Length: 280
Image (cartoon, rainbow, N blue to C red; front, side, top):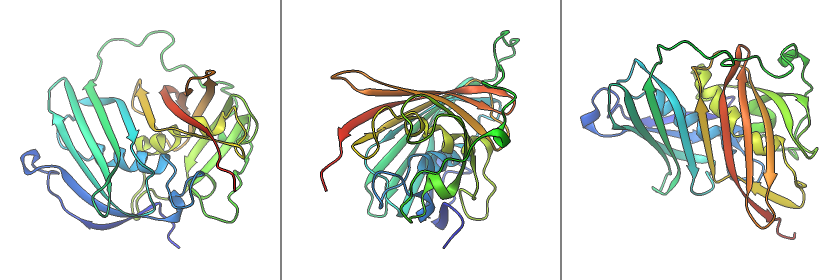
């Protein structure tokens, strides 16, 4: 078994050095460390979210720009196995830049898309409340409780790829929750994950830790994820302060404030597809 979430396969450098050459293309094999909670053959959203951020980070230009927003659309379940990543700068710019990355199966079916916005770094002084301490600031990752999600013997992203420490709530306890997250294995074999990749891997957990419905009776799958960043993230550990709301006759919405060990970094939001589990 591999101890990385993704194994590089055939790759090309097209687009990495010259935008005119077209999108950058890389190929990977997703291991069982990417597995999610809804389907044993499909990935947790945090794994491909981090992989697409990696592709966006590797695009040329915009060195004076900072990532302000990335929006993911999970168009279909992302399978384990062979995948292709394409990334490109859609709109170059000196002050604002738009990037796009897509994830496709081995037979060319698009399963996930990310669009990212980079903006010029601000020279203005930070507001008084910007970059505030994390909730329960004295309680770092070492103070959190390990609460394992039931994996039923399978290696999974939540239980084997991530180190999760709860300050409040649990996976199976309904209601808001606060927890620290850290990738414990490489995202890509042979590489050290960047802080931005680590944040992306954690940001998709908001609906999972703040569930308001029983896991054994309902699914609450997010077909999207949007992350806003106030500054560049640092370090390995990221904290989510998450809450889910479910409107009667409407849709679910999960919202998370995101912190690193220096303070607040940004926020994440997820729309939720909520449905009763099929009888077995």
